Each structure stands twice: as structure tokens, then as C-alpha cells.
Image (cartoon, rainbow, N blue to C red; front, side, top):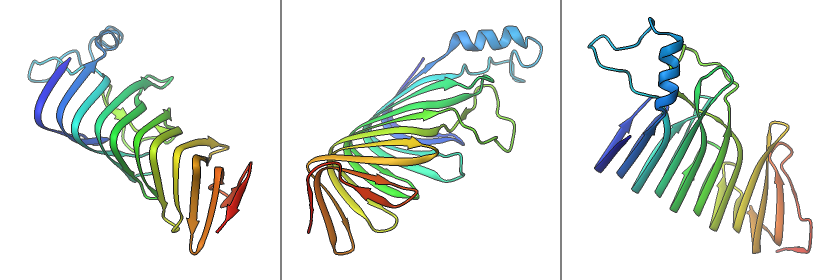
Length: 219
């Protein structure tokens, strides 16, 4: 375990982070298992120090700014007041980011959209893209988005010019494509001069289709 306070900065190929406090929890058991399986490979580093155990959990608070590498070589930027990241392992034993929870003045940006909310939770699946270089035992690979939940004054702006405002946003990956549902009193989607207003609005990314499962109106 490691506890850091005061202008914390992390610079890692998969994750760059700045915050006021940072707590890291490591998987000691996993490190012991790796050393037992490969006792002669790299039990200690060249300078005689023990290698760092794999990361199990990261908690950052206070003006958090985080840049996360994605499997497609792009990145996602995340600003918030509190960030929690949990890791998991692929069937082959490779470490990857399994879930990310951000709270407080959340602002998330990726190449396709810009999201602000009070709370954002992202579940990630094991990466399917093979890394170009063989990762080390403790290296963390970027996961692939499985689902996303955002609530509290959600506002979304997409790269094609659409905007959406809602109380809650739910994104699920279906057949490899994201499907988004907005809930609000009301939820509003705007594109060009058109505005769609309803309590629930569904959007399919692959087909650019927008549907309303209940009452709604165009303005």
C-alpha cells in the first residue's frame, strides 16, 4: 500500500494522473504467485530491489486530472474531485483496468464525445487488442468499454454536433456498438435547429438512429 499527499503526479504509459491525494493498493498475493511460478525469471530487480506488486486499486482525490490510454491508441481525459480505479486480470493473467468511478464535477472527453456530470461509472472488459510489445507482469493494459452510467446534470456533446441534457445517461455495448439511453424530466437532444424533448430518448451510434419509447415532442 502507498499513500501520497500534495500535488501528486503519476506518469505511466497507460495512465497519467495529477491529484491532491493518492492511495494505491497492491496485490501482494498475485506477486507471490508469479514469483513461485517463475522463481528464476525476475525475483528481484538488477539493483537488488524487489519488483512492485501489481496494482489492485487506485483512489485519487482533489482536483483529479487523468489521461487514460485506450486500445485504439487514442486517449480519454477525465477531470473530477474523486476517482476510483479497480483492476482485474485477463484469462492469460494480464492486468487491465476493470472499472472506473468518478465523482464531483466530472468532465470526461474522448475523440467521440464530451461528457459532464456529477457522477460517472465505467465498466470495462478485458482488452481484445494485442499489445505491440509484450507487457510486463505489473503493466496495466487499457480495458474496452462495456457499459457507462452517468447522472446528476448530465450534458453530452458529440463530435457530429449533437448535444444532450438529461438526469441520467446509460450506455451499453451491443454487438460491438454503443447504445445510449437518456432519462430526464425531461431529457433533451439537440442537433442543428432540431430539438427532441422526452422523458426517455434512445440513441444508436452505428445507425445514427434516435427513438423515443414514450411520449415526446419536436421543437
